[in-house]
Image 1 (spheres, one colour):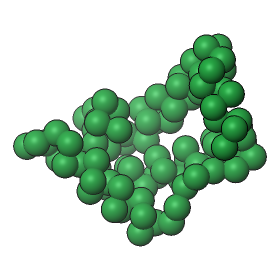
Image 2 (cartoon, helix red, strand yellow):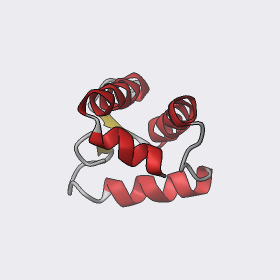
Image 3 (cartoon, helix red, strand yellow):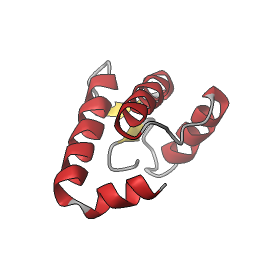
Image 4 (tube, one colour):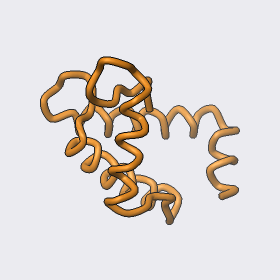
Length: 89
């Protein structure tokens, strides 16, 4: 995925991508508690996938089962906290 590497090397494009990513994350936090629960994370994964396809023409996203596995893996990063924060991800 050379296009991703090229974007990461361009500070302006990378900032644009990260702003879009963060905006998508915040929009998917339906209860505004600062973390994504499983259902919010699934919505995020789909919306982020759509954004990646628009930006790059393709995406690395898997399926709903993989989204669930990723959620539980990221959810273990911060002990004693249920949900994934932006910094966990």
